[in-house]
Image (cartoon, rainbow, N blue to C red; front, side, top):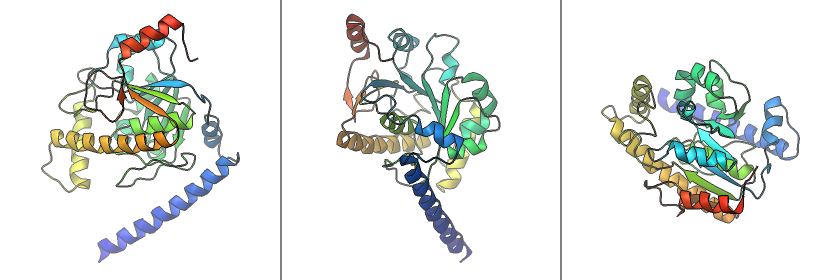
Length: 286
């Protein structure tokens, strides 16, 4: 009985929060903002209307040469999570950085604050848990749902995919007005078995914490890291499909420039050919 009472209270509270966020989003759409964070957030609306950008994932296919090509071509790029582990090896720096995983922001708070200088976007849950907040920090309201969907108004809130930060990046790229979005290093493979662009990407203790948390919330006490990775991979593909449907309706083209991998929702393009063509035409987006 007590369990159902608690669930009922949670449902009521969630609905109340959703109404409040919709109200906040409505005011922001009218140019009325109530916080300094809201004013900064609104300033990004259609900032790059009609332009293109590169969204960088941390998959095993990503190379240092890829990032240097983006830097040389002066492309606008988004990066995420712990990609700053490559900063001592490349001149490239992302235009914007994104983190949505609360476990990262808690366990790596000091590291994040000391390593990221560019504008960092996080969701409100992660923002609240950050022990040390870096400069140029912007947070976005979020509502956790079992099923991911694209928010029609990210000024109000967005729904974390609970599988990948890339959905957050894609929604923000569309909000900023980009009409061509290229994914790179977004392999969509099992991150616990295939890994990332570098070994020891995440400290072992964070992986274990992640697994134990998933075991509790999903009521699967014997779940393995491999099973968790596959679960998240499947969820991410479903989320990418919903984003593709949304993008098509709004005239946004999303391409997958990653080498290999298992993400086939978006049209494939060859990254090296793309960069060579732009060098020939002297193209840059800044």
